[in-house]
Every structure is written in structure tokens, then in C-alpha cells.
Image (tube, rainbow, N blue to C red; front, side):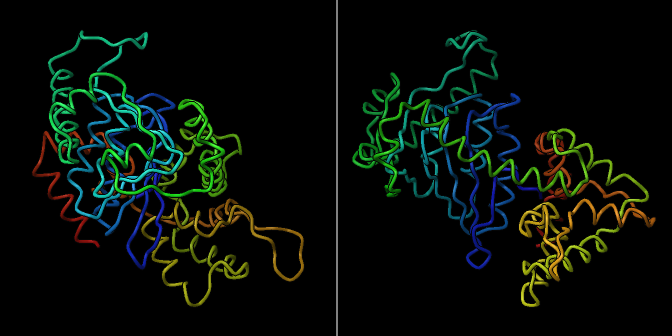
Length: 357
């Protein structure tokens, strides 16, 4: 599965982390909660420890509920870490872990969940489905806070208005288990919540952009290509009869990476296995956007050059069947609908996917 929000921290300890930065929802600049939930489920199935990193304000209730439900159903050891601001919906998520933590400069805000209208104002004009979602989410939050030692009276007081906590206050109130010392408290502690979220998300953004540039280079697309162009290129590559043989692509990249020192005889088998399960992550791990030539040369080898060279020779290949992994990567919303409308098919696909590990 392509990991958009996650990274593998340690294969030895089977640990991974997944970020939830910004607002949650289905907007262009929001984190799609349904997609995030499916990626979390993938990590949860394949790792023993998952750390959820949170920084941002709330967002869409339904999308937030997808994230909350996936964490509740998780079977791995789940920790949640507030790395900046966890407010509203993200405040709930930040407390969902088996061991909630906060960075020493972080801020937490809790209130009773609600819907906003197009002007950003609280609204009570809701459908029956939306009303039910609010009831479910508030009930989860109430039970969560009472589990942390709060009385019902204390919970109602907390949720009556926007209640803010510093890391020290959250620890004293029993809402979190640990404060992580960062060395940046003096620098960041005085920032207003909105400014803190923006600063930290801006620091995180370049990592995403570098990874996107790697994928763009691998597909031979123009440097200014956006995410939609990348998705279309991937789907086109899968459907082309003359698409390059993946094994040949991997062989070529392994040779180049060995010359650069990224791949060694010791880790080659693991790298090849990674390439067959997640080619995008394989490319990212090798860091082969551009690899200097060996032997003192000045030219470099790009991944796009490798694929272009292999494209010159025709190869056959059948289209991938729509497995559980295919839906997770390409159409997670259809997978979510299938779980409700056709649970038998969903279970069969999920069992087949689990059997592969």
C-alpha cells in the first residue's frame, strides 16, 4: 500500500508512525479521514506499535469519526502524540491512544463536537445522520475522559466551552501520560495556537514535497506535476500493455543504488521484497531522485531515465485484479462502502490480504 501519511520507523520492532496534520475532511487542503483511516488500518494489521502524530484543528465530524473508529478497533499498541496543537476533533484523536503524550510546548483544546455552516458558525440544522454522528462522538469523548479519571460533572464542565490545556496542565489533569522534552519549548511556547500549527505544518511540508518529487521523477513527469497528474500516470502505467516489467525496473535501480552505496549485498533481498510490496516506498527509501555516476563521471542517473530506457522494449502484463490492497491504495471510499453494503465480499478480500503476510 502507498503510504501517504506514514513511515516505517523500525522493521525490527515492527513500529510505524502516521501523521494527522491540519484539518480533517474532504477538502483539497484537508486530510481525508476515510483515506487516513484505511492507511491506519493497514499499519495496525502489519505492525505491533503505531504512533499517531497530531497537529491541527478539528474539521469534518464524519471524517473525524472514521479516524476515531479505526483507532478504537486497532489491535496494535497505539500511542498518540500531540506534536503542536490538538484542538476540537483532533483533540479527541490525540487522547485516543493507549498512551497519550504531548510535546512540552504543545496545546490541547477540548469542547463538545458540533457542525459548522458555510460561514464557519455553529449550526443545529442537521440531518438525522449528522445528529447521530454528534451523539456517537460526544459519547466517545465523555467515556474517554471518564476513563481518564474525570467525573461526569467535570466532563460536562470541560465540554461546555473551549477548554485549553498546556502539556503540564494536561498531565496534571490526568489527560496524558507523558510530556516529551523537545528543547524547543522556549522558542514555541509563546506562539498562538494558529501560528503554532502553521509553523509546524510548514516544517513538515518539505518532507512531503521531496517524496512527491521522487515519485514524479520515477514516472518521468514534468517537475511541476500535481498529485492528480501522478495518480493518472500511475493508473495509465498499470493499464498499458507495453508497460515496463517491474522486475526489470527493480534490477536496474538495484544496480544503480549499489554503485551509490544505498543497496548492499546484505540488504539487497530486503530491498527487493520492499519493491514488490510498495514500489513507491522502495523508491523513497533508495533516495534515487538523482544518483551521481561512479568512476569519477559527472553525469547522473535519474529514475525516469531508467524507466524510459526499459520502455523501449515491449513487455506484456495483465491488469491487476481488484484486491483488498488495490482498493486501499486506489479507492478506499469504495472499500468503506463495501464493508457496509457487501460485508461478505469485504471479509473475503480482507482475509486474502491478511493471508499474504
